[in-house]
Length: 248
Image (cartoon, rainbow, N blue to C red):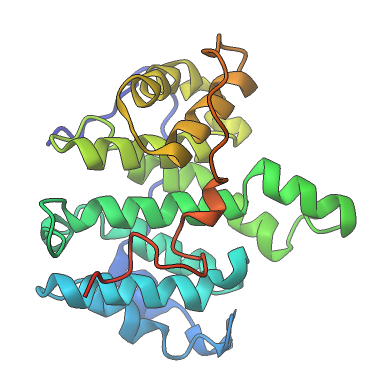
């Protein structure tokens, strides 16, 4: 796995806090999530590092419901995302998924991509039209969006990972996070990864993210494809069984 920076000449993004500090230093009980406060979140987050991949996948699915129910960004979403980004390099993230030879790391990256998409320019901007002030500085969603450069640093380390699924998941997450103005310097480089997704991936939502990024950044976009479901219908926050839920 190559975890070197993919664009050495670009400004360095802020460092993530260690995941242990996020877990121990966050007042989870004071944070709102989908069903009450976040007092039970530390136990769920800790299970992501269990050696049993079924436990890890179950915990990730549970986490999605707790801090991303109905594609909503809650107060507890931001520290949960920092924790997930922080454990991407943990040995437990290399555990193969049940019934498939894909590292759990790909599922963690998928979760980050899905969560970032819930706060993307498209989704947040659409909500702002109906709820003026939704993106005002200091609001829950605005505060989460401010973390995008920090999250980008974590996911971009895996753009050249040895496993195809991890590379694609990292690229999709990076494409969504790179909407942040401070990350504009990376967009030409990420456009290369977007084209790889369009050339090689059979995942419709991932292809949709790649096409939208290229179009938004002024790059040539291949001819239109048949309609596919929007990415938010395919992630761990959907009502159907997502890729992160245990297939057993």
